Length: 302
Image 1 (cartoon, one colour):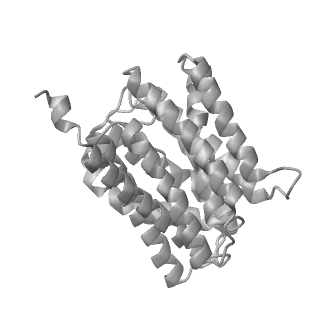
Image 2 (cartoon, rainbow, N blue to C red):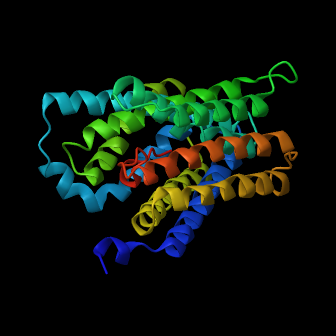
């Protein structure tokens, strides 16, 4: 039995991706529970500051990794882009239902696919183009422009997914020269630095409750990405990707039961279309035996 076959554990992969989904939904719900008690920019900053404690195991690797001027520039640009994405995401959480945030966040891999073709020279085959068009139809079903108001929260989520896609592509460049764990660690550091001036502009003394909630947000975010890494080590992304659809179900139920948000069947339908397109792209990557764009160790963090 080959090492590859021995490491192929689809049930374990699906279980860990299920666990990751639960962690991300709980993280999102915790942010939602803050409501308007704290400016979303300040909340984003505190989430990253509190999350720095989870970098301690990687501290030696961070300090011993040599950074060239090119790498520092890439880290800095990525930090700014990702900081914008985080601020937009925290803002969207105060404006639109949990299910809509979750469904629209599925667009990130679609933007990555487009960006890889435009900037990294990857081939954009007809099948990928068709999948992207299906995903865009899913977005239109969720937003339904002309049939309901498209709020600033929806625009913020479109911007979030776009910025996260840019962060992904920069990570793909960085991981060629630096270990993935160091790339992830530097993301937290640079995003924290990037958020400082924005947080200062809106700063108000936070309550201990808000600090506790944001520490839990950081904890569940870290756990979610750790579980995602375990999932994609156990099985290919083509196997684990469909399990992420459960996030939309949990977010819809949680929004209805805890936050009294109405269940919008159009959001579920649109999210299903987007995720189907993303899953198809992932499946094609596996069939073609190409390196996946959505590498678990460089996945965007919120």
